[in-house]
Image (tube, rainbow, N blue to C red; front, top):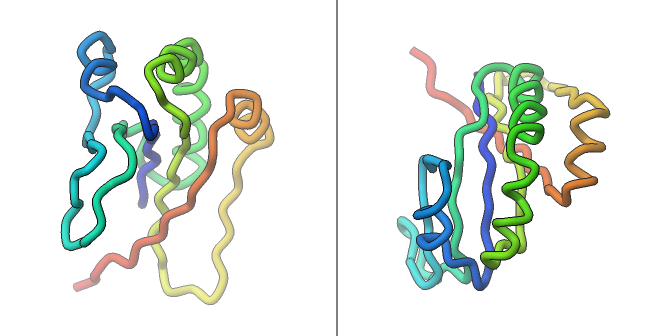
Length: 129
C-alpha cells in the first residue's frame, strides 16, 4: 500500500498567497527559512503537498492521470506565483522481496513530460506485527 502526492515548490513561491485563491487543500505546507523536523538546515524553498491517490502503484498512476487532466491549467498559475518545481512522489511499501517492479503507463509519463513534472519513488518499510 502506498500513496501518490503532488508537490509544488519554488525558491520565490508565495505559497500562502497562492493557496488563499486556490481550491487546493494541501496535506502540508512548507515555507522558505523553516527548519523541518530534526534537520539543521533551513528550507531554501516554499511549497505544498497534495494527496493524489492511495493504493498500489497502478491505482496511484490512474489517480495521477486524472489529477493532471483536472489541474493542467493550475500549473501555469502556480508558475506565475513562483513555482519552479512540480512533481509526483509515488510511495511504495517495501515488502522484503529481493526485487520489486512497478509500472507507470506511457500516457502518464508522456503527460508529465509535456507539463514539466518530475518523478520520485519513495519507499517505506512498515513495521509488521
